[in-house]
Length: 96
Image (tube, rainbow, N blue to C red; front, side):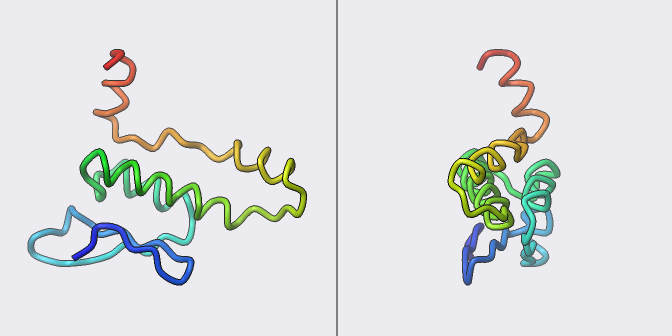
């Protein structure tokens, strides 16, 4: 069972809140779905959170309609990236 699946330009995240009773994946076709999955702890563990966030940016980047590289990068920078669960955000503010 994989926690993160990237297949056919689509992201699927294992919903770890359903384990061990059910194996269910969250279909992520929007970066906001990825962010919400991370925030509600459907994705757990620092490596998985980091990988899911990176894939979330890819999902967001796929939706950017720009032919010019500069415009694309400007729009990419507008995507929010503060997707850490609240406990990790507190550690960041504490300087850890």
